[in-house]
Length: 65
Image 1 (cartoon, one colour):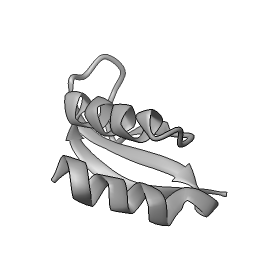
Image 2 (tube, rainbow, N blue to C red; image 1 turned 180 degrees about the vertical axis):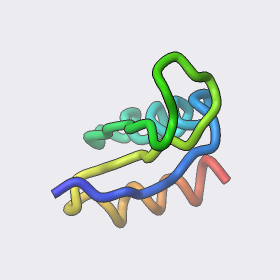
Image 3 (cartoon, helix red, strand yellow; image 1 turned 30 degrees about the vertical axis):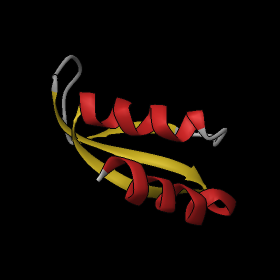
């Protein structure tokens, strides 16, 4: 099951988090929330498999924030 590990405020922030997690060999999905196609700004959910949730959370805390 995929779990939300972070909610980003911009597409650029979501892509930064995705890159950090993928660099650590984690599976990552990014899903836009409450926006229409083509919008640059809006919320983006970063999702990882439930089994990788703790590791992903630790990476975000250490490297992104």
